Image (cartoon, rainbow, N blue to C red; front, side, top):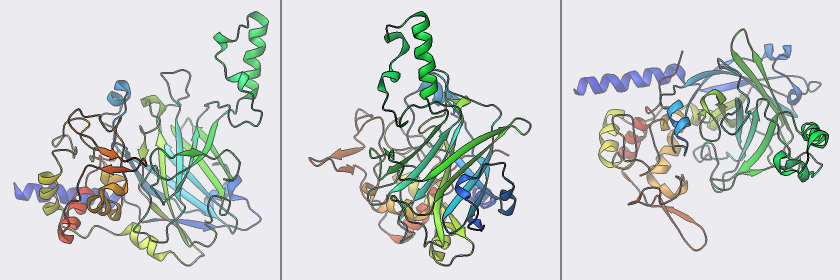
Length: 404
């Protein structure tokens, strides 16, 4: 049995090594080019190196949607191809991923394909990066989201809230209703392209004043059954200053509307270092995000199962009661070793919400004091350094199979 366990864990490390991407090398282009305005078909992308990045199902919190949960119950990871270009003023990313169908939201029970690019704004200490997906207190992230063909109405600069009324409540009929429908269509932004800043759960705020200077686009290749998305932004604006960095921490996500993907129902990468090829500095970030766990995964497996499996779901065979605590079955796909170590030693550093803190009738996920500060009910675990390293090594193996 011991040999089998060793074999399974060793296999997990081999798969992880094949799928892991140490860094993305951004190619420098001249300042006469505006990378922030590039589309996925522009020939300039031929200058960029293509990196393969693994994205994994986000499973920390189950959606309150039975159909979405069923559709994504056995989701696999996905390899996406990422390229990056930059100059002194801008940086741009191109991400290509397979998707057999084009999905556009057409009602309350359908959703659009889309993608996101997330950037940490503070990374002086590469061991203390924001929580992936939402940021964390004192560690802000910028999140740039684009959804295919999903019309949106704010901010459109017109403040025309009268066009956001359900057409059945307008008291308009015949020609008047047709005029109203046309006005709504004309006022819409044809695609959902928005940016947010976030410092943890419950803090995600849309940037509506135009200060986050960015642009996004998506294009579908029917022959290859794949999407190409681009995101470009200025390296310096009111929300962040990346102009002096030699490397940046970036993460990527994609949504599959055909599988009811939206919000937390997505595929997500961990933090990846983007190396600005002609710049020096931030070598520590590249080293940290490409570092392999230092511990013994087999020893960590035994400790984690003994100490954590009663509350946390680790995999299909080690499933805890529903809503006891965050699901860790894909945690190794989008976490860094440093984040996992922090979560073990200081559980309240990032408190992941469930449906609410009383989602399990006999167990609160966290408490809230009079100032609104949330404290995890999980006590600090495994204060011995060797045990922490072993646990992290095992947790980093917890991830879905990556589809080929």
